[in-house]
Length: 491
Image (cartoon, rainbow, N blue to C red; front, side, top):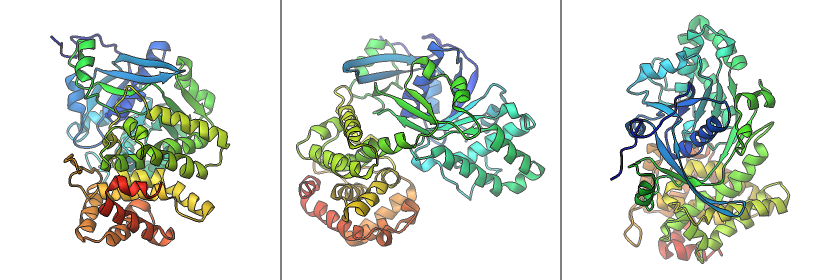
């Protein structure tokens, strides 16, 4: 008989609440909270996390139902040796929904020991929404909520310089901290009249006393292990409904903020001291370009290509006679050619990535990668597409076919085998694709998608020569031949 998992049935440590975490999803719980757990175990960090749900409907009720206890199952290979381990994570003290617990949300700013803010609100989360008002309870955007929280802290402690926060976003955007800081300043200007006489002092306090870092995160997290959950629950003897599965590999690069030294940040956040692969560096740029291009770039396009070809698992896609060749074409022949690091180093990193994709322990569902596919393509694949065109004088066929697969996936419906095709993105993007496919014209789909300035911040019909024609041709191939046969035409 399995026990319920909660603080009455399992030991739970108690540490001061020092971290506010925007996001309760699989990645943060398997990566950041796992890191904090290990820092607590191995150093005197002694911190617990308060989770804030960044959107109105999320998982905080499930978390609180288990007293924020859950298990992480890490699988893969480290130093050539197989790893398959389970750890119970107990660093989350509580979880708050700011839409129903707004007072409790703002009260976090009043806690003197709070020091860190960590987030993962997806690539679409770090955006400035001018419709947000200071009086909203809460602001709809993550940067808006954070600005409200920071101003409340500034007011509570009367601008005390020692009460600034260290902010470490984990959204997969290059220079994510810089973008987040820019959004906060935009809200300060937008809400200038609401701040009144405090406007200038608050702005100075944010600039001098808060520390916004750019970071890079790297761990593949498939999420809830549906296939293995019965075995795992028997092994741990708890009916844990929040088990999260991830690969054994992890890397977190944290770029020092301009108003703090590397040494100071290492002292405040002693992850390296705990023996973790957390690098506090002068710049995260070289790590970011390599990882986003050679890991996330292939991930983004292999997922719709694989799923529409009837392949559900990343590992199976890598070993598929056609999809496997497609992945290698995108990674080695196209994206690798757009980077400026030594080729031998890039080839080694790309080979390591394929080994991680091919993790024998983890059934990484390709559908779990496809949330917000268009913003992901914009940040992960479009830069490489442009550089490849500039350097080679032609468009990268694999990347364009991947974009065509994303467009086709967003058409919805069912696969040939009856499996549902269920895209998930911002409502306006979903509506755009529905309207474009309703025209019955692949040309209109291609032109309409590429003209979507809200996705690309430019009209790609005009800025990338030949892309409209090639995307239309690939959409036609997929409609006429099916995904798998369409892929064969470019190999």
